Image (cartoon, rainbow, N blue to C red; front, side, top):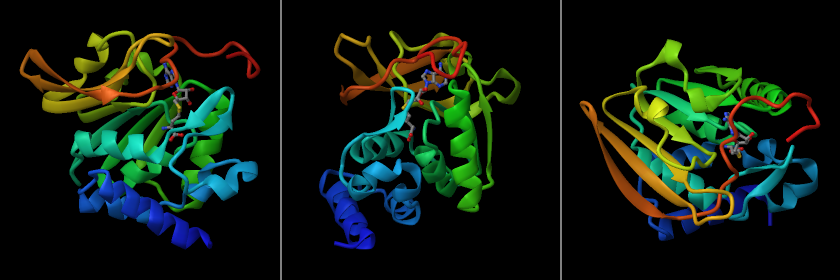
Amino acid sequence: MIPATRKIRLILDLRRRGITDTELLSAFERVPREEFVPEAFLDKCYEDTALPIGYGQTVSQPRVVAMMLQALSVEPGHKVLEIGMGSGYQTALLTHLCRRVYAIERHKELHRAAVKRLYALGRDNFTSIAGDGSLGWEAQAPFARIISAASAEDVPRRLADQLEDNGIMVLPIGGERSEQRIVKVVRRSDEFEIEDLGDVRFVPLVEGVPRSPASD
Ligand code: SAH
């Protein structure tokens, strides 16, 4: 089966699983996932699985990315903060959905590779840094939307504070061993409404940046 056919099959599968946002499905159609996975996994790039991208990290499972992005309800005028850029795959999807993405990745090497891929695909409505996303991006706040691909123990207040009023944040909550849930946080002035969207497994949100390329 050629990649285009596999991609359509994956998109139809997402649709069946409740991803009904047409703009989002169209973004999945436009972003070539094959550009974001290591060569050894090319044959699996349109399977609904997470795949290793090095440094113990993975490009997230398409179904989970789609579910989180649908819950995020991104609009064309939005400024979106993304934590855990990883391969840059979700960043690419976001560049098709919003005005500008501010992306943070703690691994310098992953960050560098992601930026290179995104530019090679002609995506340029993003700004990114290698650093600690658990701090958010104060200088660029507030954000209409915040999404994290790495789980935190609890809703990080520091990130929630960088949401604009009525802003939405979607992220996994839970420890490395404990159960993880995807939650949606909606800011209402100084109150935060929290909705549980279900369970899932993610890599942890690690504070600080690695000391050497080889370390975690
Ligand atoms: N969205 C990514 C998923 C990558 S996995 C993709 O589509 O490829 C989660 C990523 O979060 C990893 O790359 C990991 O290094 C990163 N991460 C973990 N803690 C972080 C932190 N505090 N700040 C920024 N990135 C972090």
